[in-house]
Image (cartoon, rainbow, N blue to C red):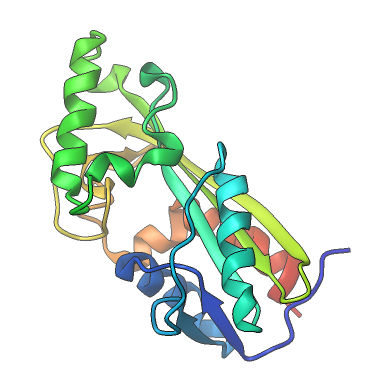
Length: 203
């Protein structure tokens, strides 16, 4: 049986303000006070895992050293035509300045280099691994996904990361154009959260 979360404070193991805000909104119905790793002065551990799950568990365990349960997310864009890239190094494609306009341009350039100029050929999905870790070392991990394709040029100023080039299946607007509430219903992170809530938070 999965371990249930019974506290009222949770460390969000991230320094990414967009991600912290999104996770906080998803947790708001559970009366949990979310504290960012940055606010606690916790350093960002080096993400040495080769999978989203490995990196999420690494980050959650590191943040739980603050003696509070910690929730970590590792997520990224997976483009099969690029051999799964950018994948677990999605954030690194944005460089040290976290310039995702540069990262999105790199995706477009590399797709063109492999002959995928047609958006319908540019299948992609976002993946998210969520790990809840306790100070005693116990972890619970779930994964979520949302499938779609990429469009260029980027559209929309909402969301963060690669959202402006991602068009989810069955939708006419990108994640970058989408109302946050709508995105929260269908995103990879929302899919993972539903599974985590069912396992660890729901009554």
